[in-house]
Length: 294
Image (cartoon, rainbow, N blue to C red; front, side, top):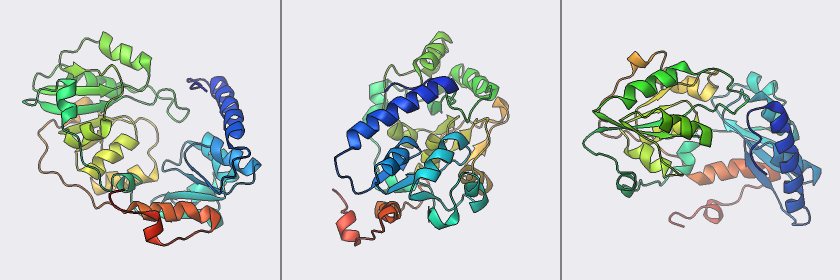
């Protein structure tokens, strides 16, 4: 089913369609366990079919969806940064909560190597400072704020001749607006690109989202957030550490070449899988879960 758009009515209709489609798909297939990251429809359907489920997320203030997912799931899997009192409000009592250390991005980026050909494919001028920008999540219920800082930063970077900025839009409307601005230093890809490689190879990331910020932190790229909603516990910790910097005004942005990469210590993905499998009470041997290079 298509995205529900930015209205609550549209989102409810889309959720209803997804629930029906997912139930049709899952019914009769004899699944042993269901995993979901912030997709609350899956634990709802899993519960209706008697399938144990793990519901994972790392931003606790998307309350509408998490209140459904947490209550329906067998286990709720979250970073150790999120305090229990915030989870209690979502219906995730301590007895069903499973925690993992660090960032979720440090698990799926465990053996990541960037593809440098993405720069040539996009026509990046390597003599200039490469900045990757991510637009605000304007269609999300948890982000109902005008984001003037992001627009000011876009204007500043888009007119800086020493910069080549790649703006990654979330929606066709955002992409059209970016192109209509006709900023000389701004590149707006026409289709999906290898964002992970771009983030790893960039000198700087400016993002109004969450996941791309944390990917930048994990990959050692300096990152500023223009997110205008309430920061979650994971990002609060990163701000305290100095790994993530929050922009209040465009004049605070430091534009410079990236120093030598300081990639964080990654976590083997089998640790995450073991946490997720707790929904079914399974703790299999490491070698049956994870084989490097496969």
